[in-house]
Image (cartoon, rainbow, N blue to C red):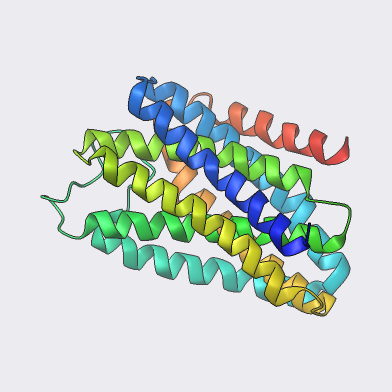
Length: 249
């Protein structure tokens, strides 16, 4: 199977965790403390993958300057886009309770939430596809990190959407579309960067990694800390260690 097709399938599979999480939230009442604990675990997993499998690898292959520049640019672009979406009703898109704005309260917030979810998912799928360019198959630790973070993300956000009166058609339409877009992002990342110089790949990888870290700090950690502030640090530490062990197994 061509590498681009593999990247698309892995991206779709990782994005599918969003749909799985949304389905669990829609049909099963999951305590908010459990959702927040899993969110903290997923944040730790992502931070570990960023540290050891993305940024460190980018620096080794492309050099410090392109990596640092890409990493900072990714964070700045993500934060700027996130601020714009927050002003249109997507600020609490990962929250699992009534704090999410409804369409009645904030017209256009449904579209903003959908775009925000897309903003969160695209960088993850790009870096997942780029791990295939190194040869030897997909980066297992990176895939595990994205899947394990997407599951509570879909669960938490869908629970909030349900509480704010969103319809099942909207909820599953959003997450199904994001899962599909994740597959396309992984595929296109490989198509456009296959054969690119190590410096270019490193810069793009670092850019996506910077966006992911900003996403973790802006959206995942607040949800986790709000409901499990006494245990969020421990859950994140266990997630970090789990990803570290996977990457070295």
